[in-house]
Image 1: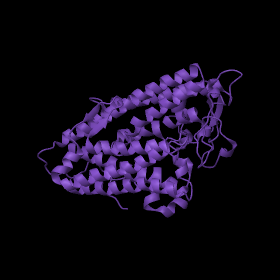
Image 2: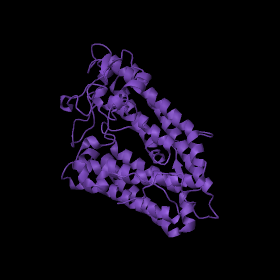
Image 3: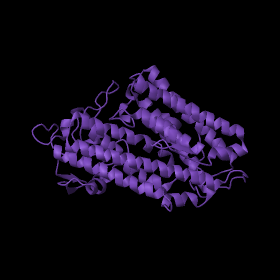
Image 4: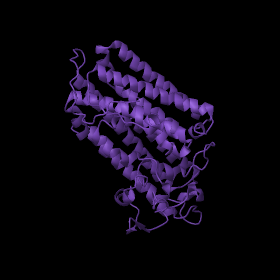
Length: 420
């Protein structure tokens, strides 16, 4: 599928005058939803930090379960903020700090023998900083005696410029709470024991004190990163000011985020690609088997932006003038079409979520080669996301906007390239 492909978001043709809906107010609603979403992400990350502290202070089955539950709860509001990428450079440049994926987990901790070791693509893929107080990275000796947020952020993350050297963010924490999922396309998530955090003779995996230091530091780093982005969307924050500076450009940013997340990122890189490769390593939340929720809440974030409404973790609602209002004034039929497409996508993503949570049919099982039920569920989501992107394109045309660039994916645009 071919999409609009020019890069200068600011050079948009002004949309037609619409008497009833103030475009600046639509952009303000968008910024208010972003602020609320990042504030919710921050508050749930702080709860995760507390749960991690409880695990470290008294490792047990219960405290490990509590930390895992806190991580899962923290993912739901964060995934709804991913729609603010792509159209907002401040967010897109920052996002890799908190949600980069996939990661070569052997950089961080012990891994199963089946994982392998260093490779031409990543010579540090099995460096295991938790087991090694000193290590060599990019030809330099690194003193990792003290594991701190600064060591993780400034030295380990993307070591030697290699993107899969992900040492920080949600997925590094996920790995440290669950461990590797060694079940392939069979049921089951990672099974890291709580004794990996017991200091003393009962320690499993070795280096339990350093593992605790890493988990504590990386969780603190997540909190500080989210504090940064929540501030960017607060009153007088840089991201809010940037998107609000020009109402037409703000509308372009909104639609760019919706279209890019719908098409190239979610339908392509996160869903279709994994199905083509039948590879559970392509799951977004692969250690915890939480991918069904990540997909669902990504879709929900797109719907939130179009409808101008977000339900916060405390149950309150942030809402206001919306893209839906703007489109409806020009073409009620197109607005109805867009809302219908969004509902259809959420139904398809909801079916994946239901299968995983209520039927015991995990996302990695859906990826198994020849699993017709799994393929149908995943492709239902993929097709819904592609279909709604077509309608987003029609909205771009109807509002007479130009110079939008939607992210693409070889899995959708050039499938043969995936296997080359």
